[in-house]
Image 1 (tube, rainbow, N blue to C red):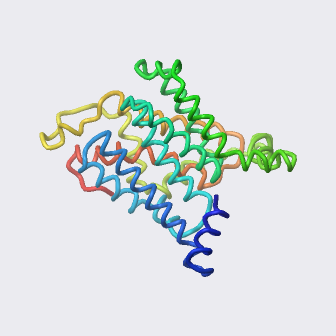
Image 2 (image 1 turned 60 degrees about the vertical axis):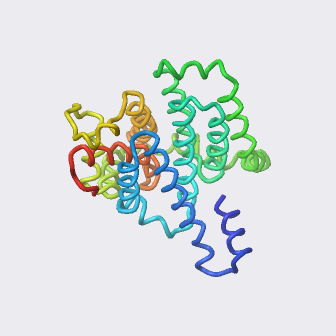
Length: 277
């Protein structure tokens, strides 16, 4: 994905540093827009604006916005997938599954990390009673086929090269020398989210509901909305926690995990009457 985006940008606008970095900024904008739309669907416009403030202000996002790495296109795909998954699972829009398939396919072309969303999606469907009906519907399976077709250039390349990148990102990652790195995960979260942001992320799932101002009453999250955001935060995070118990973890790996937490943190700041970070 990085190669294609840089080629397209430099081919259309000329070969220079700006055009090489431009797709990173565009990807960041796409991620922010999908986060904004997701938060509107789950809460309201005021909370959505606060989500935008968070994605602009937190180091996890603004520090990477000008570097053309695989992470930025994956952020865009991750945010888009969350938006379409919310429309499919909570909004019961069957055509949204096709957006899910396209988003996941493009995300896999960028970085394999987005595959963790498949695990989270299965977990949500199994936990949420209303969503279980999708197990008997064709749309999720068609979405998986669409993602596989979009991802097929990587599959073909691996087939012709002894499954090199699959082996490197899979068995080789998990079978290397044992090295405890949970402290690096926690330290990385402090850097990426700032201490205040990390406290807010931790506080939201465990806090008790309390009376909120009338102006925010319509934005109060339902149980399903809250479950949706928590599942798509905690399931991928749990995988990295398990990995960090025996292997070296890199700082940027966990960055997309926190995207699903931002709407809840934005709502929490509205509920408590605080300004965003």
